[in-house]
Image (cartoon, rainbow over all chains, first blue to last red; front, side):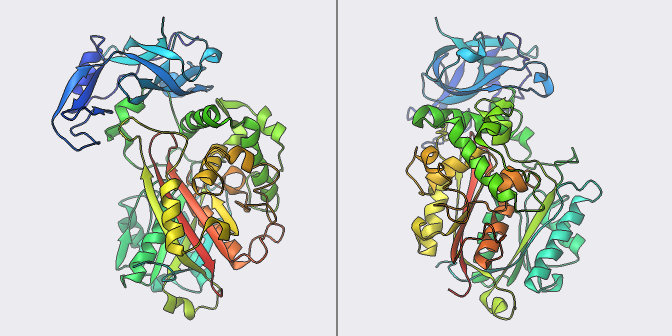
Length: 135
Length: 389
């Protein structure tokens, strides 16, 4: 099981502070531009249409596994965590995002698996979004 | 406007060592610079263009020209990871064609095997994407490339056995290279039996980690005419960037889908004309996806293409990486683009090891991939021709 992954605090910047602040409340925010494009990672402009008129909205926290790997040897804060699963999850809203899969045996992970977000407190005013099998 | 035939690679040098604990990075840069210039029949006094990536310590090229005691009229610090040097050759050819310089030196050096002080460059901690990519325990290249391999397997049925065939072919070549870090021939079974690093990539799916470096000298046609050494003519260059595309990343292809056609078009040739290819081989999956993306087979067919010795010189369908490549020979500074150029030049000069020299080798391709297959990469493709053809 990958129950006890470390939760190193990400470094927010002026463009992403609102995103990371929301994670502390268990809310997954995405940015959308005035033309409806969902933006990932969050930034000043929409890389699809270059609009700078963007707004935050709350994502469903649901997605599917696009790809994954089982890391067999961790480093740094992950030195004692292996084996654990890193993955791209495709959110319902479109973006494919890097994350970890948790609460699942590493040999039970499959591409296409339905997953939902879980939050792991970093202890520094933010939480990491990870995903576990749905339902 | 094109660079076709407007520049030649006149000199190359690969550092013979794979562990260099007793020399500085600057010294290794200087050693390979002197080696490549000597190969061309030129000296540092002739150099009026210098190209390097972030493997140069200090303030990039500015620090290195000072160390070398030269001043140049053209300086380029383009950083696209392991593909940088293929880009540099293209940029040098463009600068030469524009009359900005006539003898361009490109160098690479690094000590990842014996020094933890290697600076990978790029300032990742301040990058806008870092907070969204660094918390997940994906430390280093194998994990990122494994994500691409897993998806390629899912979409196209590619197998670990097929990936292993790529390592086997590289090892068959490396046995003839006295400098290769891993000169031993391996089997598919040995690859599959090696420890899993990050599913589905085994240890032997990964390239070697070596100290070392290399250099090339790119010159104008008029300089080339006065040199005794046979050169390689720069016929085509293409480069591209592939990134996460606003979260719509597709891990089953590389930037070679754009850099390849640009290079082929400029050279005025097709993939069927290519006698030998240096294909970036940080991992077996890198080779497989690149072969597809350069058009040597259809997308998804790479796993079948590499079977039956297709990559094995001299008589395979697509002889590749006859020095043993990054998979077995050398991957200096964790960046394999320079050595891709060097072996391509040896082949088109007819100076590869006789056991792996492709007969009548007239047209060669070298391809570099820098960065990561799973996030953002720089891709660069070069097509070189024999001087007298």
